[in-house]
Image (cartoon, rainbow, N blue to C red; front, top):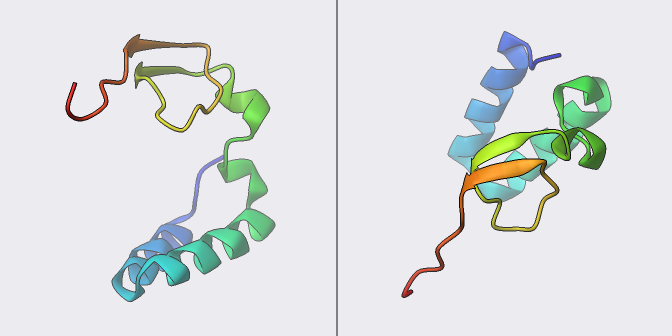
Length: 70
């Protein structure tokens, strides 16, 4: 499932208002279209090019995270 055109537009509009509005919009969208968002179990089946930096679960990644300054 994907976000609809209207849902994507709502996120675009929220971005103009800042972080708090993006978060509020995401919370609303997760209620009305939960299938469009990953869960921990679906993330665990994904292969990412870059290693997730927040320790999200994943099946694998291609390139390890390089912290800035290393």
